[in-house]
Length: 217
Image (cartoon, rainbow, N blue to C red; front, top):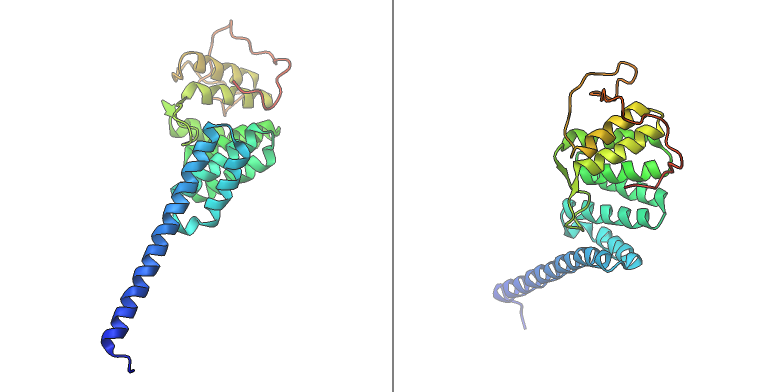
């Protein structure tokens, strides 16, 4: 029996159809895994979320860069809340390598670098977050909770205190207490990276005791 062009054409169409179907299945599985990372976090099933995040990364060719970045941020969150700060930093760095100007990985890096006591590195990332979005920031896509600018400012205050810039820390706390408003009341030449310092003499600018990395409001 000879193979006619018609038969070859039908076989080719069948093969292409099977491959397309297989790709659709892989895309669907990857999307399912990514969604389950978020669902696992909602249930506080951290190890399950970690396992699924690695599956998504393995299948990263079959999903968007944004989805991969989101999953990496969620992985960083898990490592952070379970005290594995070095691993959290690594996850957020990988997320930031996908989108360096996204607030999520920069905030995660600032938080976990601060927890590790690497305050200068943490400051660079939290200052970026404050400059990008002054009104509202979103920490991670796995939660619908909005992280307001005052939360970022409180973290900035903790980081500035860690850096020994107590007046700057007081100013950021002052801003946070006022809902994130940027109040221009003059500059402090002693601390050039902490512009718009408050002049309120009642603000406590002394070092705070028991201020340990990892204790975040």
